[in-house]
Image: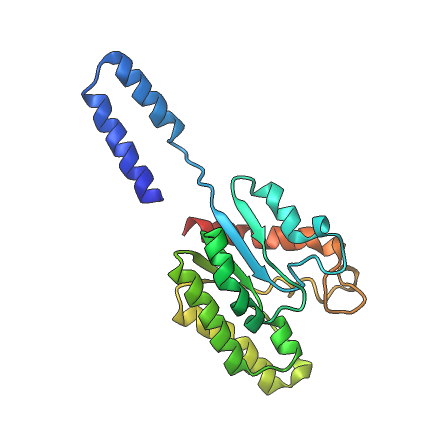
Length: 218
């Protein structure tokens, strides 16, 4: 889209050089309007309960709080509580077809870890999610997911490494796990000790927003 804007600006400038005063005024006006473009992108969020406003009204969740801060973009929240990478993989093709997103934000893997699924399967499913998104023409922002060490150091290490392996291998942006600065604070967590509460949602929005903006501009 940036290349199209540059080409359009070049044509306008060429037009200005060879036209009457009146035509030049019109052309300059158009150029001024396009000098600082704000492109409207569609952002698809494919996540689990951490992005699905679990335990609170939808309008209190971090995605709902993000929308008024990025009004130039269309944000579609396709997150489902309890979702795994396998579930996301089943839903993604239809979501890509119906929404044609410019950016796909993948926040999945937590439920795979809670259920003790194989890191090998996690990597396979995430790889497929990434490739489907890239093949559709979308950019991919992948959220890191970290499982606690009480799952065993070997499993936790293998699980957590998957996201960094994908960052090295695939053409994506990897965002640090937004729960890292939330989970240690009981006042920001629900009673289950797994999900962030309403007080944490704006903090998550503030954390995620620059990463979304970075992905859009890539």
